[in-house]
Figure 1 (tube, helix red, strand yellow):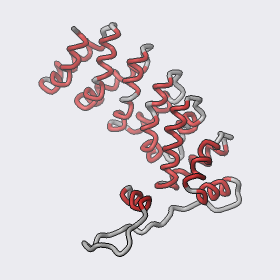
Figure 2 (cartoon, rainbow, N blue to C red; figure 1 turned 120 degrees about the vertical axis):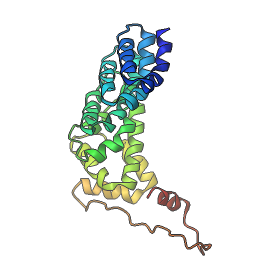
Figure 3 (cartoon, rainbow, N blue to C red; figure 1 turned 90 degrees about the vertical axis):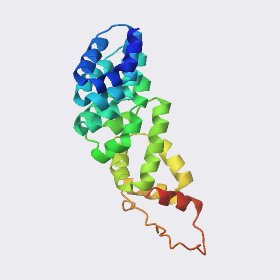
Figure 4 (spheres, rainbow, N blue to C red; figure 1 turned 135 degrees about the vertical axis):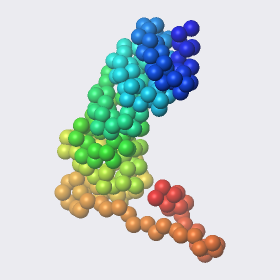
Length: 229
């Protein structure tokens, strides 16, 4: 019954914040696994309504030994950035070497905003996840790096240099980049070897509609990239 009550928590908090908060605290103290998992599943809703008061719930769940609780809680870490980005980044650092793969996998969607917040990766989150032996983590991170190289090379540069200087294996990145953009791959590798300049952002002409049919249509790849700019 208690796990079903968790589904009503958001409404209870909206109706009476103090009562809803106390109810959440009582449910959080329950030791039944189903109740703990149910609380983890509604954690995002609690953050939206309780803000800082929901943070102790998250931290307790991240210390759980139950994989289901850890999976749901780690997927909610991104909510912390709306409260305080430094605390959010600190939690990413704490979880980057977590023994459970699903926890590390759930961190990857946070990394694009994390790098915007901390371009130097002073916490080493990017490096720790790159050397992760989990194939899913590595694949997701590689796709993020490829995308970053294309749209934000100034953010890509310090990350790739830090990985290179740390002796990280970058072959898994160079191979797909060479297939997609061979000249850029060669330019980055030359820069890392001290044999060239840092590749700059590519200047693309952004189409401005004149409400007339164009004489020439852009290449599909250029058109798709322009939508991201």
